[in-house]
Structures are given as C-alpha cells and as structure tokens.
Length: 113
Image (cartoon, rainbow, N blue to C red; front, side):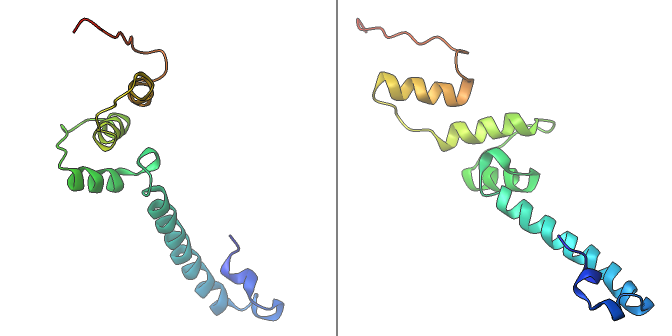
C-alpha cells in the first residue's frame, strides 16, 4: 500500500506539515487495513482471529476452558458447525477426516448391530 506522501504532487512532499500529516495518516490507514484484513479472515473458521473465534463460540453456545489453543478452539467450532448425521460410509469418512485428519482414525462398520 502506498504511503500518504506518495499521493501528493512532488512540490508538496518536502513541506514539513504535509510530512507530519502523512505520518499520522499512514498509521491510521495501516490500522484500517489491518481491521479489514481481520474482518475478512474472521469470515472463515480456519482463519479467524481470537475475536472471531469468541464470536462464533458465543453464537454457537460453546464454552471452552481458559488456555485452550486457537487450533483446538477451531476444531471444536468446526465439529459443532459440521454436526449433522452422516448417512453413508463416505460422508462419515469425510466428516472424520475433516475433524481428525486423514489417516488419524479407524472406521469400522458393524453390520450385525
């Protein structure tokens, strides 16, 4: 992202007042850019920051222990988000892979009930 001073005509760039305004504006614009980036990242569970995770936990009625890592919290949120009854072997396997990771579980079907 360009700095404020770079948008000014050349003859204004050397004036101290414009340099001072530019340094203040650059801080403000950097904060806005970070806010927009955080907001965009919070749209998805996998990239949410702490604030986004807290928001989703509140919406979904999830209580977590203090000290729980962000990755663990994401797994808990994803588990609840994807909580539906899988009806086929393939949907169960896909659901388990999304929670446990590929190859980190064993799936057996008991046909005898």
